[in-house]
Amino acid sequence: MKKVAQKKLGRKKVRATKASTMRLKPELQSALDNISAQLDRPKNKIVNQAVAEYLEKTSYKLRDDIEGTLQKLRAYRSKDPSFEADIERFADGEAAYSSDDTHEGKMDDSVHSLSKEIQQLIHA
Image (cartoon, rainbow, N blue to C red):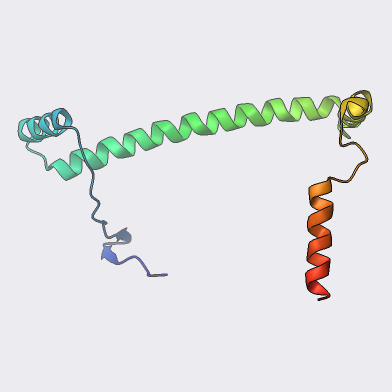
């Protein structure tokens, strides 16, 4: 991997910026042009600030969502730590519907014939 170019500014190391191509809707481009002119700031700085704020806000939301999901999962697992109830429900479901399963305990003929053909080709 390539190392990111760094400049030393005092005691801090600053990573070099990377050029990116973004496609903005015309109305967003126009608004960006206007804000840049009004604030007398480069569009690049405005876009970087906007993206940084969006990413920060979104990352906090995602973190909160993940933490909420983990809390629910931990609460669920604490009710049945060895999943005995789930395993039992699964086994009961399999047993209850096995008579409706036309393939229960039977070899699929197409798989069997394919296996037979492969064996024949191997031993030919």
